[in-house]
Image 1 (cartoon, rainbow, N blue to C red):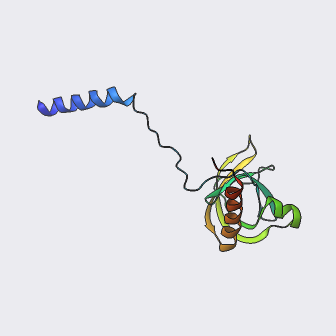
Image 2: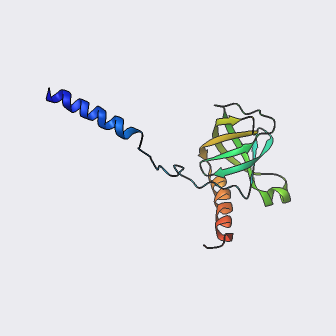
Image 3: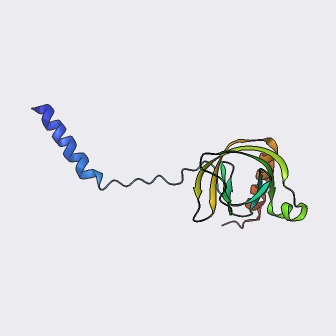
Length: 138
């Protein structure tokens, strides 16, 4: 009988509290996302523009909708906006990524980085540092 009361109390207690529990998980991303400056990424000879990016992945503007969810892609070119507009060719890099989500209504594809080479890390770090340096202190 005591065991039964314990379970009834437990069930009542959990049932009463479940509707009122609010979890504040906050930001779960490991890397800060940046919207500007945009990066230009070359995959299979086609250049894509980022809507957002971080060291963990990219949100690409996929105007033609050719990236299927789950696809493994090799990014072989990367440039920041200013460099791309001056030089017109992304720097050679080796980034392996997976398409984790496609949003055809917004013409976007989300990629998660599986591997960044030193050249890619260096370019992205320089761009992030320039953005951080140019932002006014609060």
